[in-house]
Image 1: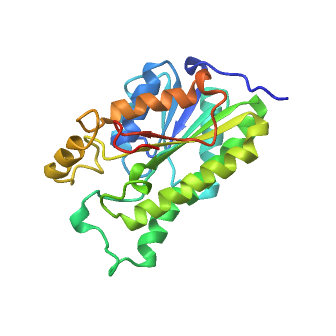
Image 2: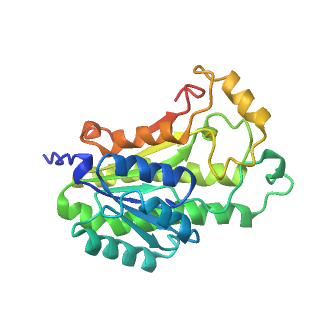
Length: 259
């Protein structure tokens, strides 16, 4: 029976997609603070990515890649391994197609079209499939790996029906569960972290203040979760302490949704 070696965070190479801004930038700062090496993937926000890397330039690398492109993703993983001298140990699928959490501007049941859904599926499920497949050779070589997919609590509590966004994240949750079964024998865990509305990221900047107040009033902790609090939970799934946890969806929203 294979028992995967548990790497301390300070010995890890972490690749975070969509890591230049918002939650991704916060995840990067959190892992850098623990001594990890971090590859900061971005698509358009080069200056923002460089700003994040400047926190620990000797342990961080900004790398531009469209994660919807499988060839580009494989090249990215090769470049990260060449830069740090070892393969990626933890992959965090955080990239999000252009999306604004503004309920007044969302497509409704009458206006939703396949293009809306396809855009989110490409940016969420397809990109995760690309990155996971590119990560597997290095993780198998090491006999261990951590894959963390970023989800949403809107499956359980669709307070605002973001149909396209939620459907894509639901597909990612399904992949999380099925891939955990496939990859467990390789010592690779696959888990999901699902948040609610975070105060505040680029994506939630358009959310009316009244919505934040409503969520806070209905949350046991009586406040909206911050990106920093959410990122703390990612450390658990990447750390040695989660070595027997896989196929799980941990909701980090202050108790609003009971998973």
